[in-house]
Length: 630
Image (spheres, rainbow, N blue to C red):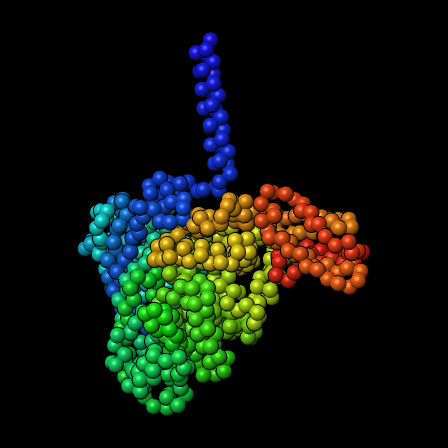
């Protein structure tokens, strides 16, 4: 009997232990199975740091690009050495043909003008390790080639073993889009060009999903490996080239006086007119073959323009080393609005280097290229941005800063923008709002208004699931507004100093790597000083919206009702019958227990005349119950 009782007791303890463990698991965040596998493989951790066996692949690109302004064609050729650092032998390889977005008949999530549509990227030749896979835009063996939208998959004759490399030789061309369509990331703008997504790019193969074979349909952005670039640009006569990386043959292409002014800007705080209007009255261009190199960057883009103006200055981004960063703008000479942007650009990079996140700007230069289009889409690339202009000055300067902030995320930290675009766009939007501060708040003017109109509607989904191709109406909300507000709430929850420490730890741990959402969550968990899974679930995993209301007022006790599940702080401004006022604040952590009501007790015996709940910086979808009048 005693033996039987011991067995029953042991069974009971096992069941109890299992039940307790299950409860612990249930309290944690839902994890995609791919992330769980990565943790088991020791490439990721639940502390937010890279695992002991973390790896990533890379490429060495040696490319030539030729821009034909008369035919509106970019022709390219070159080689790619692809390094397989993964533990698997790769039996296939995927390429990004981003210009196939403009291919007639392909799927896309945004409408494109008929005049920009063409036959897609023309692959003149593609060899891998000496084996010909495509010639004259046709597969040598049809069974080895699959093209789906912008994804080109090649089943390899010989696999790429782990720890080895493949040499890819290729040539290609495509028609450069040139319509006035506002959604373009790149193309021809009048007589100038901005060339992004211009080369066949090896897709990312990572420890989470393997090959990233999600096609580009127009709205969502990109996921790239950190690679090295050696690029030669053949520009049309009379054109100057600006690009990712460093130009190492300036003496062969630019007038000595222009180089002298550029060097002055590189070493001084003052703003220099590197190319002023009077410089175009003489010949300042000596050649049309420009050579650039850039190491460990996730992409390469370049701009080609004539008769443009060029202003520059530099900042000391790292006081310890004295390292300077060139901050420059390139713009058409028809508007003073462009020239004022350099002050915003300079101040933005000083702010990130010394105020938040207090990490020195990671690159040697930050060029804002203004393409001359009005109210179009701006697009970021490492060290250079393709900027449209906005009539609203505040919005214009906000966008200039926003695109520059992307040099931190995703270019210094390689987020998967294809699956989780809210990560980099949310951080850039957050930095943009924090940078502008009291001068103006784009958060107040734009983000909060859109939050109120969109949160909780059919255009709103949990951020963690925002990997499906979004509609145009929900794109800005899901990638910019909602994640920006979530970060602002997270900063308020943790406190400014702790939030800053967590942000720096996250950025330093994942510099030059590929962080997932869980790496973000678990890094901040280490600094939170307690369980904040309730916050992650509400703001990133669940459907919901922010909505507080005044439920009741009884003498010295006010009941605040949490009608929405997104936690926000309680801010009360009370006016008493003697016209004195009092403000009460409660951090949003008062909702961590899941309570739907919170009592606020007033110590004074004065009679309350009016109560205002919330303020202009707290999201709330329904303000109709935020005011009490006795």
